Length: 446
Image (cartoon, rainbow, N blue to C red; front, top):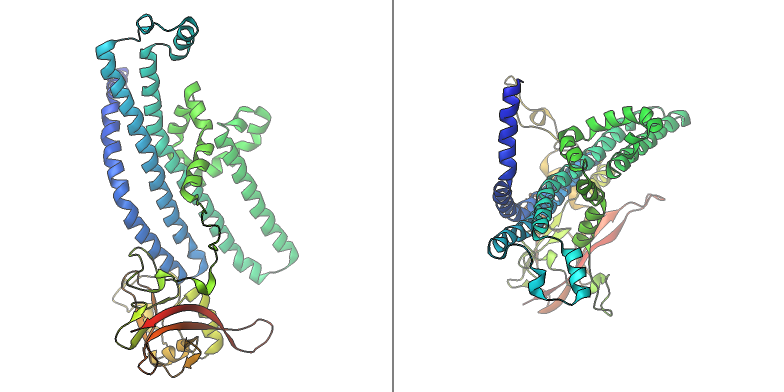
């Protein structure tokens, strides 16, 4: 780049630097509005991802982790930008006040000598106060997006460790010798140790890079983890923040600030001493009833339209949990062939050939339905309802799949009754079959 171009670029950046507060306010206002509007969609998206992750192999649990990272990033952006608006608003108000009264006139205040000396020492000049507000506002704005990239880097490291674990599984299964197991575990521990060093170097503002005897062997670790965590994306922002005294103070504040925000996000209070936290069968839970469950809440195990049964027919939906129930189905009905393989896939057709799902020979739906229905027992009070007609059912809200049945309650009296659903279990010690309680909730027949 020629010297003339460099000078023009410098002039442009200097001008933008002076006027950057206008861009900051504009971006902050739009970002706060957008982040506030995205909390609900992200929550719904997280619920859908959790439903998907329950239906595929455990190695895809990163989908749920990704939704948590996304929600956390939006939350941090929201909090930080509100702080930015507060300090930038103070800065604007201070400038407006300066145009009226100028500097602080301590003689006009007529404080006693001890207070006058203390105030002049602690407050300093009003222009200095304005400059401090300017510095704080600008740093908070940069600090916001630095935290987001930190969270993304943490997610990428966890994802890397998850992929490494999945790559080890075939090796551990094919060669379970103690030597191979020891080597695999040693490598995993070494990676975690290096990741810890990289994190400590980051929060200590480059401590390991400053020590020559450490920097020699830390350099390759730094290069590798820079690629894994994508830190090269925000590295200029980080180092430009900590290359001055004020920025270094902010940098040292990163981890405590992160811990405080997480604590605020997860804090809970307990003020009702004689109401137990775990209430068992003595709690009436809205999540079982469609008319009282929050729109943003997923069903956990069962769902019925209402706790009040008005027409004598009880519609019961039992959610199928693939991660929990697939292995049990294989034990109960080993001859069945599932409809499709678990995991991620696509419906795209290449070269005019049919998809793998169409080519796959699977058991007929009635056989699958009969086997899945063997997982559950339904009781009203102490009466076991056998030979119920089950149907496959998909809930429209989050795409949760399971079985639905309609139970005729015309023969039982009006009033309170207990609906209980048990799930089939296989003890590890024996081959006997038994059922364990899945849900018990009161209902009222009108």
